[in-house]
Every structure is written in structure tokens, then in C-alpha cells.
Length: 279
Image 1 (tube, rainbow, N blue to C red):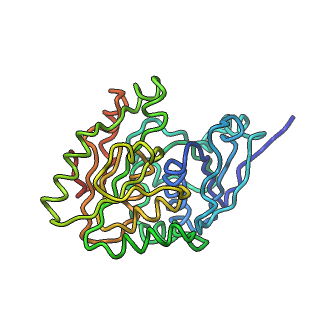
Image 2 (image 1 turned 90 degrees about the vertical axis):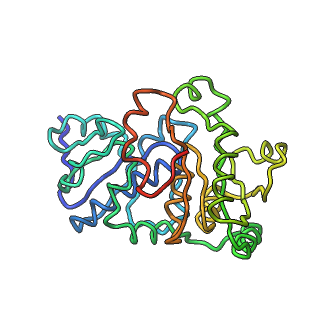
């Protein structure tokens, strides 16, 4: 018979989903590991059965060991008191009281899990390598603009897959027009920088601003965070682009509704940080 026990001197969090999801999971686990002064381990076993997703945190200067515990996961779930599974999308204050020697599994999409260590999280989500030449060119444009505003338009499976659309929904162009109008009224002369997983769609719309194309996802996020203000989609990716912005006077506009699914939408009360505007 096989016996397996979780090490008492570390915390393990299971990663899943895309870049934004993985950042939330890392941030929650990292904050808990800092609270207890123990190492953090990232379990990548979820990607063994998800061909559409892969580990995405390599570009960042994170502090964690990366492993895949797929052969042990079924056993871990049977270990009483050592496995924590997120019960809902809403913030769970019990997580901050979890002790080392746990395996955490969930999305943890609220800054409440890690806001006490915000400076560390922002520092560890800085990039290891220099930007590409193309990204540096966009950065110069962003930094030279007096009032730069990143606009993230999430499309992809949000619009192409009926099941995903029914669950997540998709921000209408009316939302973006309203948000851009609000920015103009609040800030004055603005320069919009558009980011999307379908930049060619934005080009076809002849949007009023710079459409950023041809960069990696982590470069897109970095550039979004370097804009002075943000207009985000109902996307964890653009949430992080706004949260990583260190401008103390930033204006962040987020959609009033995050999920199309009613049950999930009722659990989003802790998702949007205080001070962000909902339209």
C-alpha cells in the first residue's frame, strides 16, 4: 500500500487556466507562504489533461518551486485536513488561516487573498528578460503620451464558443464607448492603446488609438500596466494589467457585470478592488 504525506514546511497550490488565472493562484499561495515563512510549490498537474493551457509564469521573477504531482493528486484528495478546495468564487477568509502542509485548489480571484503583500506580488510579477524591440517601441509611445489609457478587448472563445459565451459573456462595444467617453471627461486629452487576443478585429473597427500587435501575452500585460489608466474587460488577464499599474492616481473602469452566468455573477462581490469604477 502506498502512503503519501504532504511536507509540513511548505505550501502547495495547484495551477490551472490561463495566465491571469495562474497569477491569482500564485499570488494567493505566495501571500500564504510569506505569512508562514515557508516555501511555495506550484503543482502543474492540471495541465496534463488540458491541451489548451500550459504553465505561463516563466517570464516572471516569481519565488516558487515548479513540479507536477499528477500521480499523487488522487491520494492527496483523500488526506483529511490537508487538502483545501475553493468552495465558491467569492473570497473565503478561512484561507488566510490555513497552515503549512496544505494543497490548495481553486481560483482565488480577489486581492483580499494577497493585498497585505501587494508590494511583493507586484515585484515578483516583473519580467525576467528585457522587452523585445517591438515592445520597447510601444513602451516609448506609452511613456510619451500625456494621458495613456490601456483598453483590453477580450474576444477569442468569449465570442466564438457558445458555451463560453453563455458562461462568461462578452463586453459590448457600447461598454467600451461609454468607458472611453468617461475617461475623456475625467482626464481630458487621452491616448488610447488597445490590446486584444484578436487585434485584427480592432483594426477593422478603425478604433481611435494605437492597436498593439505582435507581442507576447506577458509583454501585452506589462504595457497595459505601464499606461496611466485602464479600461478592462471581464477578464482576469486585463484585471492584472490594471492591478499591476503602480500609478497612485490611476482610473480603472471595469464592466458592471463580470459573468453571464447568474450563479457565478452573485459570487463576484470581492473581485473588483475598491476605487475601481463599474460601468
